[in-house]
Length: 232
Ligand code: URA
Image: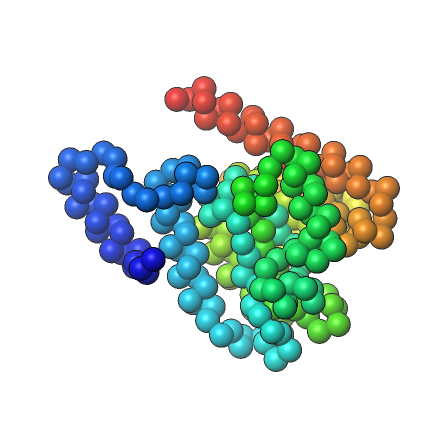
């Protein structure tokens, strides 16, 4: 596959539009792309990866093995945001692939979705040593990239996983125990905080709360779909 500049795609679309084409036969995988903007989103995410480059914007660069950018469907309606990569993620360069990741994957499947349907990212893209929490300056250094990811993907709903992700997106709204299962808004996106999967591994009974939060998310997504259908 050849890299294409976004400006080139835009010029090409304008050119085809001027020629009178309303549809284009693009080789877009149907399972991943539901609309013509999906390909543009994937390209934009690729550009963002390039912009991050071999990042040295904070001290986490020193001990990381891999930058864990995030993964999933560029066209996802649902995005999960966790705290920071752990050891497994650092090794594999993918978010949520360790034990906590398995729990998150189970939740996604229980919601009737696949990991490939959603987008998964973290507040910071590099592993904090000893799995400590990312510090405020590390979060600040990485935040513009998370914000751009959100802007590109434009999900309908974001589930923030745990205190760190919730605070990063929403500010000081309160502890996760108080705010989980509530609906907040960020740039027209519904944000539903829930417990972090690592916390659920230690507190299995709280899984029911997270399941309730996930059902709320599914209801928001369903209502959105219905609204969209009714308006067309
Ligand atoms: N915990 C996180 O917050 N993110 C990961 O990617 C893995 C574990």
